[in-house]
Figure 1: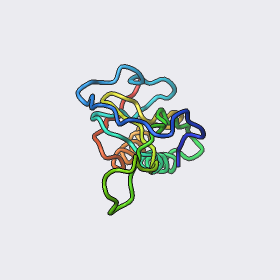
Figure 2: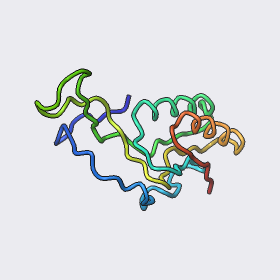
Figure 3: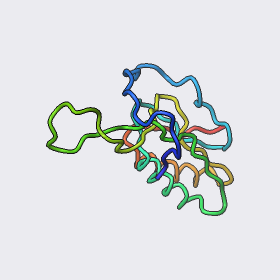
Amino acid sequence: MLAPKKMKHKKWNRGRSRSRLVETRGKDLAFGEFGLQALEAVWMTANQIESARKVISKYVKKGGKMWIRIFPDKPVTQKPPEVTMGSGKGAVDHYVFPVKPGRVIFEVSGVSKDLAEKALNQAGYKLPFKTKIISE
């Protein structure tokens, strides 16, 4: 799974919800011809990124190229079950990437339009939010 190798601060604050805001960076295609764009705000986990990546790479194979435009670097902590309140913050459980509406998550090039749309559509089914396919 994707996870940072080294971090300055092991545990972060959650931050406040900015779900109404749209993305200002990373909303246009930069590398590929087709892309998968988020339409909702969500915390995307490393497992979700990996499952969508597997689906796309299965369709694209060696004929095309794929780019992952996000990286989960925000740590999420969790305390063990049935532990009382207090005694500090829990250990880091997993890493997420806070996605805002408009962010391009995956890009694909080097394959036909119908194959790229099929791959990105299947990857969208793996994700817990609405997506749309964009092209140049």
